[in-house]
Amino acid sequence: MNNLYRKIPKIDTFINKKEFQGLSKPLLTKVVKNYVDKLRRDIKDNKIEDIDIDKMVLQIIKEYKKILEPSIKSVINATGITIHTNLGRSLIDEKIFEKAKDICTSYCNLEFDMEQGKRGDRYEHTAKHLSFLFGCEDVLVVNNNAAAVFLILNTFAKDREVIVSRGELVEIGGSFRIPEVMKSSQAKLIEVGTTNKTKLSDYKNAINEDTAMLMKVHKSNYSIEGFSEEVDINEITKLAKTKNILDYYDLGSAYLPTLPYNLKNAEPSIFDILKNPPSLLSFSGDKLFGSIQAGIIIGKKKLIAKLKKNQILRMFRVDKLTLSILEYTAISYIKQSYDNIPSLKMICQNENILLERANKIKNSINAQIKIKESYTFIGGGTFPNRKIPTIVIEFTGDAISLQTKFRKYSVIGRIENDRFVLDTRTIMDKEMEKLISIIKKVIS
Image (tube, rainbow, N blue to C red):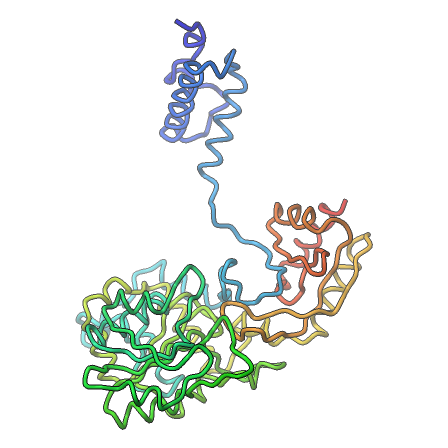
Protein backbone atom coordinates (compact mmCIF):
# COMPACT_ATOMS: atom_id res chain seq x y z
CA MET A 1 0.00 0.00 0.00
CA ASN A 2 1.22 3.52 -0.87
CA ASN A 3 2.54 5.26 2.28
CA LEU A 4 1.08 8.55 1.04
CA TYR A 5 -2.38 7.38 2.08
CA ARG A 6 -1.20 7.43 5.69
CA LYS A 7 -0.21 11.10 5.37
CA ILE A 8 -3.75 12.15 4.55
CA PRO A 9 -5.04 13.97 7.69
CA LYS A 10 -8.24 12.90 9.41
CA ILE A 11 -11.02 15.24 8.33
CA ASP A 12 -12.63 15.81 11.75
CA THR A 13 -9.22 16.81 13.17
CA PHE A 14 -8.02 18.74 10.15
CA ILE A 15 -11.03 21.10 9.97
CA ASN A 16 -10.24 22.34 13.50
CA LYS A 17 -6.91 23.86 12.50
CA LYS A 18 -6.52 27.48 13.58
CA GLU A 19 -6.23 28.64 9.94
CA PHE A 20 -9.89 27.67 9.47
CA GLN A 21 -11.25 29.64 12.43
CA GLY A 22 -14.37 31.66 11.55
CA LEU A 23 -15.20 29.54 8.50
CA SER A 24 -18.50 27.70 8.10
CA LYS A 25 -17.92 24.14 9.38
CA PRO A 26 -20.48 22.43 7.10
CA LEU A 27 -19.07 24.08 3.98
CA LEU A 28 -15.46 23.60 5.10
CA THR A 29 -16.11 19.91 5.76
CA LYS A 30 -17.54 19.45 2.27
CA VAL A 31 -14.57 21.25 0.66
CA VAL A 32 -12.06 19.16 2.66
CA LYS A 33 -13.87 15.90 1.78
CA ASN A 34 -13.79 16.77 -1.92
CA TYR A 35 -10.11 17.67 -1.66
CA VAL A 36 -9.27 14.42 0.14
CA ASP A 37 -11.20 12.38 -2.45
CA LYS A 38 -9.17 13.99 -5.22
CA LEU A 39 -6.01 13.42 -3.22
CA ARG A 40 -6.76 9.70 -3.02
CA ARG A 41 -7.37 9.51 -6.79
CA ASP A 42 -4.11 11.33 -7.50
CA ILE A 43 -2.18 8.97 -5.22
CA LYS A 44 -3.76 5.98 -6.97
CA ASP A 45 -2.79 7.38 -10.38
CA ASN A 46 0.75 8.22 -9.19
CA LYS A 47 0.24 11.93 -9.89
CA ILE A 48 1.80 13.16 -6.62
CA GLU A 49 4.95 12.25 -4.72
CA ASP A 50 4.24 13.88 -1.35
CA ILE A 51 1.54 15.66 0.68
CA ASP A 52 2.28 19.17 1.95
CA ILE A 53 -0.19 20.01 4.73
CA ASP A 54 0.54 23.76 4.59
CA LYS A 55 -0.14 23.86 0.86
CA MET A 56 -3.24 21.77 1.44
CA VAL A 57 -4.56 24.35 3.92
CA LEU A 58 -3.97 27.19 1.45
CA GLN A 59 -5.67 25.30 -1.39
CA ILE A 60 -8.71 24.52 0.73
CA ILE A 61 -9.07 28.15 1.85
CA LYS A 62 -8.79 29.23 -1.79
CA GLU A 63 -11.47 26.75 -2.86
CA TYR A 64 -13.68 27.76 0.08
CA LYS A 65 -13.54 31.44 -0.97
CA LYS A 66 -14.11 30.55 -4.61
CA ILE A 67 -17.37 28.76 -3.76
CA LEU A 68 -18.65 31.79 -1.83
CA GLU A 69 -17.64 34.35 -4.46
CA PRO A 70 -20.66 35.50 -6.54
CA SER A 71 -20.41 34.85 -10.25
CA ILE A 72 -22.46 37.88 -11.31
CA LYS A 73 -20.62 41.10 -10.54
CA SER A 74 -20.82 44.73 -11.60
CA VAL A 75 -18.56 45.92 -14.42
CA ILE A 76 -17.71 49.29 -15.90
CA ASN A 77 -19.16 49.40 -19.39
CA ALA A 78 -16.69 51.38 -21.50
CA THR A 79 -17.76 49.80 -24.79
CA GLY A 80 -20.01 52.71 -25.75
CA ILE A 81 -22.90 50.27 -26.36
CA THR A 82 -25.70 51.60 -24.18
CA ILE A 83 -28.07 48.64 -24.32
CA HIS A 84 -25.40 45.96 -24.17
CA THR A 85 -27.13 42.57 -23.99
CA ASN A 86 -24.02 40.79 -22.69
CA LEU A 87 -23.60 43.39 -19.94
CA GLY A 88 -27.20 43.38 -18.70
CA ARG A 89 -28.94 45.74 -21.15
CA SER A 90 -30.65 48.72 -19.54
CA LEU A 91 -29.66 50.04 -16.12
CA ILE A 92 -32.16 50.62 -13.33
CA ASP A 93 -32.19 54.07 -11.74
CA GLU A 94 -31.06 53.92 -8.10
CA LYS A 95 -34.05 55.94 -6.86
CA ILE A 96 -36.47 53.62 -8.68
CA PHE A 97 -34.65 50.59 -7.32
CA GLU A 98 -34.81 51.92 -3.76
CA LYS A 99 -38.58 52.36 -4.03
CA ALA A 100 -38.96 48.86 -5.43
CA LYS A 101 -36.66 47.51 -2.71
CA ASP A 102 -38.94 48.93 0.00
CA ILE A 103 -41.84 47.00 -1.51
CA CYS A 104 -39.91 43.76 -1.99
CA THR A 105 -38.43 43.72 1.51
CA SER A 106 -41.90 44.04 3.03
CA TYR A 107 -45.22 42.34 2.49
CA CYS A 108 -47.19 44.10 -0.23
CA ASN A 109 -50.57 44.06 -1.97
CA LEU A 110 -49.26 42.05 -4.93
CA GLU A 111 -52.48 40.05 -5.27
CA PHE A 112 -54.68 41.74 -2.69
CA ASP A 113 -57.45 44.23 -3.40
CA MET A 114 -57.07 46.86 -0.66
CA GLU A 115 -60.53 48.37 -1.26
CA GLN A 116 -62.56 45.16 -1.25
CA GLY A 117 -60.34 43.15 1.09
CA LYS A 118 -60.09 40.11 -1.17
CA ARG A 119 -57.77 38.52 -3.69
CA GLY A 120 -56.67 40.90 -6.43
CA ASP A 121 -54.91 40.74 -9.81
CA ARG A 122 -51.12 41.19 -9.83
CA TYR A 123 -51.24 42.48 -13.40
CA GLU A 124 -53.48 45.42 -12.55
CA HIS A 125 -50.64 47.35 -10.86
CA THR A 126 -48.55 47.94 -13.98
CA ALA A 127 -51.55 47.86 -16.33
CA LYS A 128 -52.98 51.02 -14.76
CA HIS A 129 -49.91 53.19 -15.32
CA LEU A 130 -48.76 51.64 -18.60
CA SER A 131 -52.26 51.94 -20.10
CA PHE A 132 -52.36 55.61 -19.12
CA LEU A 133 -48.87 56.16 -20.52
CA PHE A 134 -49.59 54.56 -23.89
CA GLY A 135 -53.24 55.60 -24.14
CA CYS A 136 -54.32 52.01 -24.75
CA GLU A 137 -57.13 49.80 -23.44
CA ASP A 138 -55.04 47.32 -21.49
CA VAL A 139 -51.52 45.98 -20.86
CA LEU A 140 -50.18 42.60 -19.77
CA VAL A 141 -46.63 42.01 -18.54
CA VAL A 142 -44.78 38.70 -18.91
CA ASN A 143 -41.16 37.80 -18.19
CA ASN A 144 -39.69 38.74 -21.61
CA ASN A 145 -40.70 39.52 -25.16
CA ALA A 146 -40.07 35.96 -26.33
CA ALA A 147 -42.70 34.85 -23.81
CA ALA A 148 -45.03 37.55 -25.13
CA VAL A 149 -44.67 36.27 -28.70
CA PHE A 150 -45.25 32.68 -27.64
CA LEU A 151 -48.27 33.50 -25.46
CA ILE A 152 -49.97 35.58 -28.15
CA LEU A 153 -49.48 32.97 -30.88
CA ASN A 154 -50.55 30.08 -28.64
CA THR A 155 -53.66 31.92 -27.45
CA PHE A 156 -54.97 33.21 -30.76
CA ALA A 157 -53.38 31.05 -33.48
CA LYS A 158 -52.96 27.54 -32.10
CA ASP A 159 -53.39 25.07 -35.00
CA ARG A 160 -54.19 28.00 -37.29
CA GLU A 161 -52.24 30.07 -39.83
CA VAL A 162 -50.16 33.16 -39.13
CA ILE A 163 -48.94 35.15 -42.13
CA VAL A 164 -45.44 36.65 -41.88
CA SER A 165 -43.13 38.26 -44.43
CA ARG A 166 -40.09 36.16 -45.38
CA GLY A 167 -37.97 39.23 -44.75
CA GLU A 168 -39.05 39.23 -41.09
CA LEU A 169 -38.28 35.64 -40.06
CA VAL A 170 -35.57 36.88 -37.77
CA GLU A 171 -33.11 35.27 -35.41
CA ILE A 172 -31.92 37.31 -32.44
CA GLY A 173 -29.34 36.57 -29.72
CA GLY A 174 -29.35 33.14 -28.14
CA SER A 175 -30.74 31.45 -31.29
CA PHE A 176 -34.26 32.81 -30.70
CA ARG A 177 -35.88 32.25 -34.10
CA ILE A 178 -39.38 33.38 -35.02
CA PRO A 179 -40.17 30.21 -37.05
CA GLU A 180 -39.12 27.97 -34.15
CA VAL A 181 -41.15 29.95 -31.62
CA MET A 182 -44.18 29.76 -33.89
CA LYS A 183 -43.73 26.01 -34.22
CA SER A 184 -43.47 25.62 -30.44
CA SER A 185 -46.63 27.70 -29.96
CA GLN A 186 -48.44 25.33 -32.38
CA ALA A 187 -49.20 28.15 -34.82
CA LYS A 188 -48.78 27.44 -38.53
CA LEU A 189 -46.31 29.73 -40.27
CA ILE A 190 -47.30 31.02 -43.70
CA GLU A 191 -44.43 32.83 -45.40
CA VAL A 192 -45.20 35.54 -47.96
CA GLY A 193 -43.12 37.79 -50.20
CA THR A 194 -39.36 37.42 -50.63
CA THR A 195 -36.36 38.17 -48.43
CA ASN A 196 -36.05 41.72 -49.72
CA LYS A 197 -39.55 42.54 -50.99
CA THR A 198 -43.01 41.97 -49.54
CA LYS A 199 -46.12 43.73 -50.80
CA LEU A 200 -49.58 44.18 -49.29
CA SER A 201 -50.97 41.95 -52.05
CA ASP A 202 -48.80 39.10 -50.75
CA TYR A 203 -50.69 39.23 -47.45
CA LYS A 204 -54.06 39.55 -49.20
CA ASN A 205 -53.47 36.55 -51.45
CA ALA A 206 -52.43 34.33 -48.53
CA ILE A 207 -55.52 34.97 -46.38
CA ASN A 208 -58.03 32.11 -46.21
CA GLU A 209 -60.60 30.68 -43.80
CA ASP A 210 -57.81 29.16 -41.65
CA THR A 211 -55.92 32.46 -41.21
CA ALA A 212 -55.86 33.64 -37.59
CA MET A 213 -53.42 36.50 -37.72
CA LEU A 214 -51.24 38.85 -39.75
CA MET A 215 -47.93 39.25 -37.93
CA LYS A 216 -45.24 41.85 -38.45
CA VAL A 217 -41.81 41.39 -36.86
CA HIS A 218 -39.44 44.31 -36.37
CA LYS A 219 -36.05 43.69 -37.98
CA SER A 220 -34.32 44.67 -34.77
CA ASN A 221 -30.73 43.55 -35.34
CA TYR A 222 -30.24 43.99 -39.09
CA SER A 223 -31.44 46.13 -41.97
CA ILE A 224 -32.17 45.50 -45.64
CA GLU A 225 -31.08 48.30 -47.94
CA GLY A 226 -31.20 48.90 -51.66
CA PHE A 227 -33.81 47.04 -53.73
CA SER A 228 -36.22 46.33 -50.88
CA GLU A 229 -39.81 46.90 -49.80
CA GLU A 230 -41.89 46.06 -46.74
CA VAL A 231 -45.46 46.68 -45.69
CA ASP A 232 -46.07 49.27 -42.98
CA ILE A 233 -47.89 48.09 -39.86
CA ASN A 234 -50.69 50.59 -40.56
CA GLU A 235 -51.43 48.87 -43.87
CA ILE A 236 -51.38 45.45 -42.22
CA THR A 237 -53.74 46.69 -39.51
CA LYS A 238 -56.21 48.06 -42.08
CA LEU A 239 -56.14 44.80 -44.04
CA ALA A 240 -56.67 42.71 -40.90
CA LYS A 241 -59.72 44.77 -39.95
CA THR A 242 -61.32 44.38 -43.38
CA LYS A 243 -60.79 40.61 -43.19
CA ASN A 244 -61.91 40.38 -39.54
CA ILE A 245 -58.68 38.76 -38.36
CA LEU A 246 -56.07 39.79 -35.79
CA ASP A 247 -52.94 41.75 -36.50
CA TYR A 248 -49.91 41.58 -34.22
CA TYR A 249 -46.73 43.66 -34.21
CA ASP A 250 -43.69 42.14 -32.51
CA LEU A 251 -41.99 45.51 -32.11
CA GLY A 252 -39.13 44.10 -30.03
CA SER A 253 -37.99 47.46 -28.69
CA ALA A 254 -40.01 50.63 -28.11
CA TYR A 255 -38.88 54.19 -27.50
CA LEU A 256 -41.09 57.05 -26.29
CA PRO A 257 -39.56 60.56 -26.32
CA THR A 258 -37.76 61.98 -29.34
CA LEU A 259 -34.22 60.63 -29.64
CA PRO A 260 -31.18 62.67 -30.71
CA TYR A 261 -28.74 62.42 -33.62
CA ASN A 262 -29.86 60.38 -36.63
CA LEU A 263 -32.19 58.21 -34.56
CA LYS A 264 -35.30 60.38 -34.55
CA ASN A 265 -36.13 59.68 -38.19
CA ALA A 266 -34.85 56.11 -38.29
CA GLU A 267 -38.11 54.52 -37.20
CA PRO A 268 -41.35 55.62 -35.55
CA SER A 269 -41.80 55.90 -31.80
CA ILE A 270 -44.36 53.69 -30.10
CA PHE A 271 -46.69 56.71 -29.84
CA ASP A 272 -46.62 57.05 -33.66
CA ILE A 273 -47.46 53.36 -34.02
CA LEU A 274 -50.31 53.57 -31.50
CA LYS A 275 -52.06 56.37 -33.42
CA ASN A 276 -53.55 53.52 -35.43
CA PRO A 277 -53.04 50.70 -32.93
CA PRO A 278 -52.69 47.10 -34.06
CA SER A 279 -54.81 44.51 -32.27
CA LEU A 280 -51.75 43.46 -30.27
CA LEU A 281 -48.23 44.81 -29.89
CA SER A 282 -45.33 43.64 -27.72
CA PHE A 283 -41.82 44.79 -26.86
CA SER A 284 -39.02 44.25 -24.34
CA GLY A 285 -38.93 46.21 -21.10
CA ASP A 286 -35.13 46.29 -20.87
CA LYS A 287 -34.29 47.65 -24.31
CA LEU A 288 -35.12 51.21 -25.42
CA PHE A 289 -37.87 51.41 -22.81
CA GLY A 290 -35.00 51.44 -20.32
CA SER A 291 -36.39 49.30 -17.51
CA ILE A 292 -36.18 45.74 -16.22
CA GLN A 293 -36.43 42.54 -18.27
CA ALA A 294 -40.06 41.98 -19.20
CA GLY A 295 -42.36 41.46 -22.15
CA ILE A 296 -44.94 44.24 -22.39
CA ILE A 297 -48.10 43.40 -24.35
CA ILE A 298 -50.40 46.22 -25.43
CA GLY A 299 -53.86 45.50 -26.78
CA LYS A 300 -57.60 45.67 -26.56
CA LYS A 301 -59.12 44.70 -23.22
CA LYS A 302 -60.97 41.64 -24.55
CA LEU A 303 -57.77 40.29 -26.12
CA ILE A 304 -55.70 40.84 -22.98
CA ALA A 305 -58.44 39.07 -21.01
CA LYS A 306 -58.07 36.00 -23.27
CA LEU A 307 -54.30 36.03 -22.77
CA LYS A 308 -54.84 36.01 -19.00
CA LYS A 309 -57.01 32.91 -19.28
CA ASN A 310 -54.29 30.93 -21.04
CA GLN A 311 -52.81 28.46 -18.53
CA ILE A 312 -49.37 29.04 -20.03
CA LEU A 313 -49.35 32.55 -18.58
CA ARG A 314 -48.54 31.00 -15.20
CA MET A 315 -45.15 29.94 -16.59
CA PHE A 316 -44.42 33.47 -17.81
CA ARG A 317 -45.58 35.26 -14.67
CA VAL A 318 -43.45 38.14 -13.35
CA ASP A 319 -42.67 38.80 -9.70
CA LYS A 320 -43.17 41.80 -7.43
CA LEU A 321 -39.69 43.22 -8.11
CA THR A 322 -40.29 43.33 -11.87
CA LEU A 323 -43.76 44.82 -11.47
CA SER A 324 -42.55 47.44 -8.98
CA ILE A 325 -39.66 48.62 -11.15
CA LEU A 326 -41.86 48.70 -14.26
CA GLU A 327 -44.52 50.69 -12.44
CA TYR A 328 -42.05 53.32 -11.19
CA THR A 329 -40.48 53.48 -14.65
CA ALA A 330 -43.92 54.15 -16.16
CA ILE A 331 -44.56 56.87 -13.57
CA SER A 332 -41.23 58.51 -14.50
CA TYR A 333 -42.29 58.53 -18.16
CA ILE A 334 -45.70 59.97 -17.28
CA LYS A 335 -43.98 62.79 -15.34
CA GLN A 336 -41.46 63.12 -18.21
CA SER A 337 -38.67 62.61 -15.67
CA TYR A 338 -36.36 61.18 -18.31
CA ASP A 339 -33.28 61.49 -16.10
CA ASN A 340 -34.75 58.53 -14.16
CA ILE A 341 -34.19 56.36 -17.25
CA PRO A 342 -30.38 55.81 -17.28
CA SER A 343 -30.18 54.25 -20.75
CA LEU A 344 -32.18 57.09 -22.27
CA LYS A 345 -30.02 59.63 -20.45
CA MET A 346 -26.84 58.03 -21.82
CA ILE A 347 -28.15 57.96 -25.38
CA CYS A 348 -29.07 61.66 -25.17
CA GLN A 349 -25.74 62.89 -23.73
CA ASN A 350 -24.09 65.37 -26.09
CA GLU A 351 -20.42 65.21 -27.01
CA ASN A 352 -19.47 68.15 -24.74
CA ILE A 353 -20.35 66.10 -21.66
CA LEU A 354 -18.40 63.15 -23.04
CA LEU A 355 -15.40 65.38 -23.78
CA GLU A 356 -15.42 66.75 -20.23
CA ARG A 357 -15.44 63.20 -18.92
CA ALA A 358 -12.51 62.22 -21.14
CA ASN A 359 -10.49 65.28 -20.16
CA LYS A 360 -11.07 64.59 -16.47
CA ILE A 361 -9.63 61.10 -16.92
CA LYS A 362 -6.67 62.33 -18.96
CA ASN A 363 -5.83 65.11 -16.50
CA SER A 364 -5.98 62.68 -13.58
CA ILE A 365 -3.37 60.25 -14.85
CA ASN A 366 0.25 60.71 -15.77
CA ALA A 367 0.34 58.92 -19.10
CA GLN A 368 0.20 59.46 -22.84
CA ILE A 369 -3.37 58.80 -23.93
CA LYS A 370 -5.35 60.30 -26.79
CA ILE A 371 -8.85 61.72 -26.76
CA LYS A 372 -10.58 61.06 -30.06
CA GLU A 373 -13.92 61.50 -31.75
CA SER A 374 -15.53 58.24 -32.74
CA TYR A 375 -18.92 56.61 -33.13
CA THR A 376 -20.86 53.82 -31.46
CA PHE A 377 -24.19 52.02 -31.64
CA ILE A 378 -27.18 51.72 -29.29
CA GLY A 379 -27.06 47.92 -29.11
CA GLY A 380 -29.62 45.45 -27.79
CA GLY A 381 -30.99 44.78 -31.27
CA THR A 382 -32.12 48.40 -31.74
CA PHE A 383 -31.44 50.83 -34.59
CA PRO A 384 -29.23 48.46 -36.61
CA ASN A 385 -26.39 50.18 -38.50
CA ARG A 386 -27.25 53.58 -37.01
CA LYS A 387 -24.10 55.23 -35.71
CA ILE A 388 -24.11 57.92 -33.04
CA PRO A 389 -21.13 60.14 -32.18
CA THR A 390 -19.02 59.56 -29.09
CA ILE A 391 -15.67 60.39 -27.46
CA VAL A 392 -13.12 57.69 -26.69
CA ILE A 393 -9.84 57.48 -24.79
CA GLU A 394 -7.22 55.68 -26.85
CA PHE A 395 -4.27 53.82 -25.29
CA THR A 396 -0.94 52.98 -26.91
CA GLY A 397 0.37 49.46 -26.63
CA ASP A 398 -0.85 46.00 -27.53
CA ALA A 399 -4.65 46.22 -27.75
CA ILE A 400 -5.37 42.59 -26.84
CA SER A 401 -3.08 42.74 -23.82
CA LEU A 402 -4.65 45.97 -22.59
CA GLN A 403 -8.14 44.60 -23.11
CA THR A 404 -7.25 41.57 -20.97
CA LYS A 405 -5.63 43.67 -18.22
CA PHE A 406 -8.63 46.01 -17.94
CA ARG A 407 -11.02 43.06 -17.94
CA LYS A 408 -9.26 41.67 -14.84
CA TYR A 409 -10.41 44.86 -13.09
CA SER A 410 -13.96 44.43 -14.50
CA VAL A 411 -13.57 47.23 -17.05
CA ILE A 412 -14.91 46.29 -20.49
CA GLY A 413 -13.67 48.43 -23.38
CA ARG A 414 -13.32 47.76 -27.09
CA ILE A 415 -10.67 47.55 -29.81
CA GLU A 416 -10.92 50.13 -32.55
CA ASN A 417 -8.43 50.43 -35.44
CA ASP A 418 -6.05 48.07 -33.59
CA ARG A 419 -6.08 50.31 -30.51
CA PHE A 420 -7.72 49.68 -27.16
CA VAL A 421 -10.22 52.40 -26.27
CA LEU A 422 -12.57 53.30 -23.44
CA ASP A 423 -15.79 54.88 -24.70
CA THR A 424 -17.04 57.65 -22.41
CA ARG A 425 -20.68 57.46 -23.49
CA THR A 426 -21.43 54.51 -21.22
CA ILE A 427 -19.16 55.42 -18.30
CA MET A 428 -21.26 56.65 -15.38
CA ASP A 429 -20.25 59.65 -13.29
CA LYS A 430 -20.23 57.56 -10.11
CA GLU A 431 -17.64 55.24 -11.70
CA MET A 432 -15.15 57.92 -12.66
CA GLU A 433 -12.88 57.85 -9.59
CA LYS A 434 -12.79 54.07 -9.56
CA LEU A 435 -12.01 53.97 -13.28
CA ILE A 436 -9.18 56.51 -12.94
CA SER A 437 -7.67 54.39 -10.16
CA ILE A 438 -7.88 51.27 -12.34
CA ILE A 439 -6.29 53.03 -15.33
CA LYS A 440 -3.36 54.07 -13.15
CA LYS A 441 -2.84 50.49 -12.00
CA VAL A 442 -3.04 49.04 -15.51
CA ILE A 443 -0.73 51.47 -17.31
CA SER A 444 1.83 51.56 -14.50
